[in-house]
Structures are given as C-alpha cells and as structure tokens.
Amino acid sequence: MLLFLSVPQPRPPGARTRAGAARVARWRRLRLRRQQLRRLRGLLRGLRGRPGAGGRRRGRMALCGQAAGAASLPSELIVHIFSFLPAPDRLRASASCSHWRECLFYPALWPQLRICLRVSPAEQPRLEFLMRKCGWFVRELRVEFAAENYLSGGGGPGDGGGADPGTGGEEVEALQLSTRWLEVLRTYLELVLCVLVSIRNNRNLQKFSLFGDISVLQQQGSLSNTYLNKVDPDGKKIKQIQQLFEEILSNSRQLKWLSCGFMLEIVTPTSLSSLSNSIANTMEHLSLLDNNIPGNSTLITTVELERFVNLRSLALDFCDFTAEMARVLTDSNHVPLQRLSLLVHNVSVMHKSLDNMPNDEHWKALARKSTGLRVYIMAFDIKSEDMLKILKPSIPLERIHFDSYITCVSGAIVDLISRQYDKFLTHFILMNDVIDTSGFPDLSDNRNEDPLVLLAWRCTKLSLLAIHGYTVWAHNLIAIARLRGSDLKVLEVTEESIDFDQGELADQDVDPVHNLIEQVSLGLGQPWHAVMDIESLSVFTEPNRHFYREMQSFSEDI
Image (cartoon, rainbow, N blue to C red; front, side, top):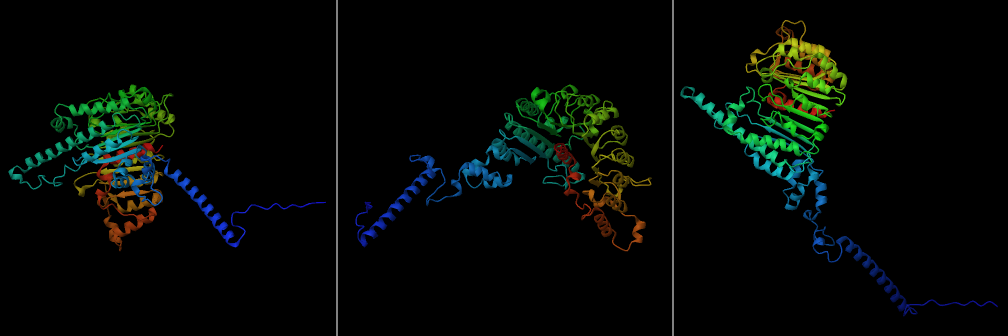
C-alpha cells in the first residue's frame, strides 16, 4: 500500500487570510528595496573612497547631489585635456584658476618649445616666466631673436627724420640711431642670458636651436669694435654667455641636434670641446653659422669633426668646410651624410681663403659615400668669379639662394647652374635688394635665350622659383610657367621686376597685365598673381631668417 504524504510549506505570519497575503507582498517589496539601498550605498562608498579618508575624499569629483565644477577635476584629467590644445589656447585656459595654472606647466605638455622674440625690453618678463617654468625639463627648444627695424630713418619715435641738415641734422640722426642700436644689443644680451641660465641644468634636452637676427651690424665685421664695446666694455656678459653655452653642452646627456645661426659671439672655436665623446658620437645634426669670427679661425676643426661619426646633417660657413672635412665625412666609420647646408658670405670670403675648399674629386667621393646627399647653398654678395670657383660640377645641389646688395648675379652663373645641376635642383631664389628700381639687371642681355627660361627647361625637378630685383620679361615668365606647369609649386616674382616688351604691347588689344596673369595661371594650373607687397614674404625681406628656417626643415626632411 502506497502512502502519499504532503508536507505543508511554512507561511509568513498572517498569510492564511486575504489581508495577511497583502502584508506578505508588502514585506517582500520592502525587503527588496532594502537590498537595493545596501548595494547602492556600497557602490557610493567605493566611488567616494574609504570612510575616514577625509581630505582625500574632498579632493575627488563631487557626486550624489554635490556641485561638480571644472575646478574639481583631477589634475591628471586636466593635463590630458590640455594636451589636445595648441600652446596659445593652453596659456589662455591657464588664466581660469590657480589649479589649472599649476597643471599648465606639466612636463608632458611641453616636450618642445618654439619661441620667436622681438628684441624688446617688454619681452623679458614674459620670457623669464616661461623659461623658469619650462627650461628645466623641455626636450626641444628653438629660440629666434628678431631685432626690430631700428635702422629705418622714419621707423619710430625719436628718429632724426625731421631734423634740419643745415643745423647738424645728420649728426643728430646718427646719434639717435646709435642709441637705438645700443638698446637693441643691451636687451639682446639680457634675453640670451635668460634663456641659457634656465636650461643650464637640463639633462633632457635633445634639440637646441638658436637664431639671432642681428646680422645687419655684422655685414662690415666691425660690430665687436663699436657698439658691443659700449654695451659690454669689460666683456663680462659675453664671457658669461659663452661659459653658459659650454656648460649646457657639458651637462647634456641626450643632445642630438645643435643649431646656432647668426648669434652674436655665443659660439667660440673651443665650444664643441665641451661635448663629451658619447654625446658627440651620437649627434645627428650640427649647425654653426656665424660670419663674425675674425681672421682664419673656425668654429669647428677637422679633428673635432672626427668625433661626430653619426652626423647626418651639417650646416657650416663655406670657408670652414675644407677638403680635409670632406675626406673625414667619406671615412668608413662615419654614417652617410644626408644634408649639407653651406653659407657663402662676402665677409668670410674677404677674411678667409677659398684655397682649402673641396675640389671636384672630393665632391665625387662624398657623393659616392652618401648617395642621398643633397646640398643647400646660400650666397650673400658673392662675385661671379668666386661663384665659378665654388660651383663644382659634382655637387648634388638641390637648393640655391642668391641675396645681393652690391654684387649682382650674372646670366652665366644661372646658365652654369641649369647645366650642372639639372638632375637635383628644386629651389632657386634670386634676390637683388637695390634701392634704384629703375635699373634692374637683365640676365638675358646679349643672349639668344633667357637663362631663367633655360633653367626652367633643364631643371625638371624645379618646384620653387622666387625672383626680385632682376628684370623678368612677361613673355619669358609665361614660358617658364608653361615649361614647368603644375610641378612648379611656388612662383614668386615681384611686380616691379616684371617688364613688358613694347613691340608686343603694340600688337595686343587686351590689357597686358591681365593677359600675363591669365597665361601664367593657365600654365601653372592654379591661380597666380605677382607679388605686390614685398614685405609680405620673408624670403625677400628677411633672407637670413628664411635661410635658417629652410635649412632647419631641409635638415629634418631626411
């Protein structure tokens, strides 16, 4: 006999009636709500921090009804947000509050610092603040000192433009001009000291670049004997600057890039000896451009260059680049040199000799060693006979920039360049800064073909052509545009350099200027206009700065 037993389940109190069932349902809902509240409290405690964390909990983001403002964001989050902003916007954002200002100069936000300074007393407090915050950790520092146009006769208050020549006006103007230059040099020295002092103990510095736009006074090579002696009669500041520069080199542990151009007596022939052998052996770029070194002294010797076995880019005064240096760069223990920038200055040519420069065999050996070698030459007021000695056929010349104030480039030089460097040349700049605009030299005189047209025809890689101060005939300009077409990315010709053939003007019924613009634009495949305002292009108004910046990008493009 089978017996089925049913065991009753326990019921909550009062569940036997209808009212008891309602109480049971309410009890279950309350129990579920209490469980949810306990879970929520545990989650909030985890977000707020451990109980008793007091001050740490107050610094966290406000939760659960408390006001959450931008000032309460964690420092790490603010730094991360700042990293997406450009440098000017970071500086503006730092003005919001002291907490953001503290986060602004976190080292990760400033791996590189590029500063362009006017040589003005107003810049000094801003520079001191910025370098005090960033100088000790910045990895890449580039500083450009830009002197204002103190030489202009009517450029500023206090000039002598309104003086009466009959009552000693010329003497008054010269005195005021001298006073302005003394102020420029005095401020320049203070700014340079500020930069060097702030990075003297920076062992993380990897790239260091300085440019000083004071070469106007250096053209005659007499700066140290005139204005500088008045500003720094005992030479204490100059010695301090040189010692600080050598100290920076000696303290460096990661330096890969060293560039100094047109700076006033900052680099000496013994400066590079401060670099340790380990740093010299790993240096990749070296640029020493200073035409103010007197006599036959150079900023780097052949023996010193032997230490730089990993050098891929080099920029020097042409008179300092000797045949022995070319031989050192072809040694098997040196890596192939990729970029070579050479400055040919009339001051250097006057004080130094061209007899020690590399001959064509040295250039051939260098080109065999470094198949990717490209050369950039900047020539300031160099005579044609000297340029014929310099331009060896085996130079892999990619860029050349002529800037003249007294000596003009001849058509024979342009023709030689187009024949010898047709496989390499990409940039050609021809600048003649003459005062009398009615007498521009014509390169096509006594020639069947214009040398500039032949340049465009032969140099198939030409991508930039800039001309000012030389006569460019309109029909030749149209021919250049048609020959190179869209491959000629930049064609800059000043309006006063363009001339029109009178015979062609008589046969045309249309506006010659409009026709020139239309034909050149069609040839280039893009809208084109002549340069109306020369001040808008640094290649014409600031040749030193343009060369230095182009040299930097030329060396980085490896």
